Length: 414
Ligand SMILES: [Zn+2]
Image (cartoon, rainbow, N blue to C red):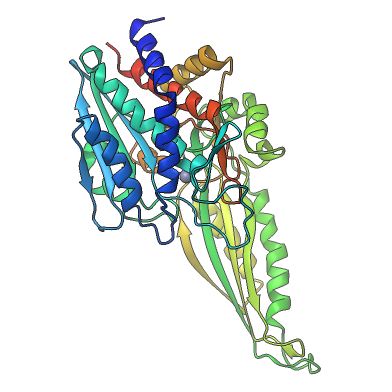
């Protein structure tokens, strides 16, 4: 093994306790979004950079949503790698069950527990420590390394990575590496795109016994919901080399995202997230509002989907549609050099060769892909993400740190 890589692994071995303490305190630095205030979490990251004497900037278009950005040049000119992770986390629900407190950062049973431990303070810690360790080896590196620890990810907000990508082109780079939960079995190179539509059904409404006088908004909504299911039949061939890669990775997709995931990764899915209609059991409802979360596979634009929706709506003159949100599906080369680098390092470290996959949900890496910068995600299992008992096993956490540090080094080494 290259002696730079050996040094990186030695430092990580010596720092195991430091790393676990850092992640534990990072979880304790509450940053639920909403409201998304990450000042305490950002101070934790800045504290480490300060102690290491590493320069950084805090870019905060809104004071509660700071973004920490740091960058250094290697010994020679070369490519620019960007490390990205978010500092905000899901909120804690009232009915969630937690073995340890949701914000405890408890270190117990060989894991670090609490909201954000897996999504994604584990991955962001890997980015911060990768930056710290590679800075020590900077004279051996060719090119530039940038760290971006951002806010405002969980709600697709405008003040985090989106703000940086729009106003600070110096964070685009030539490749981006991110540690969102993906499972150690897969490297993500793309993600489906959410298209959120709202349908409002309006009728006259009336007395529940006088069904001969008015149509029912809720019954029309029920029929519409059933018809929307046909969106899943839209043909969506995978672009470029994606189809062949996904076919080979089907087992990893199911293992990482649950049985059946491989079947829907390249298909349109329809989730009816909410239906609101009716006031009282003995009235015919005059209004019903349906919100649909439609996920588009990579290679599919929204036009064919909206065209099909309009065809369906032609049969429903009582319905108005409004688009609430759209992020195009996105992908980058699944056979890029960085994928091979991550695969080799994960395999050397743990005997796992992660397969390239597309994810069902979204991350900030889409913003780099929209800017034509290849962006890859390699992180822990999504255990308890968005529910109680979120945690990350320490062994998985250290594996993500090691894989990120070695892979960033491989990409930049001269
Ligand atoms: Zn996340």
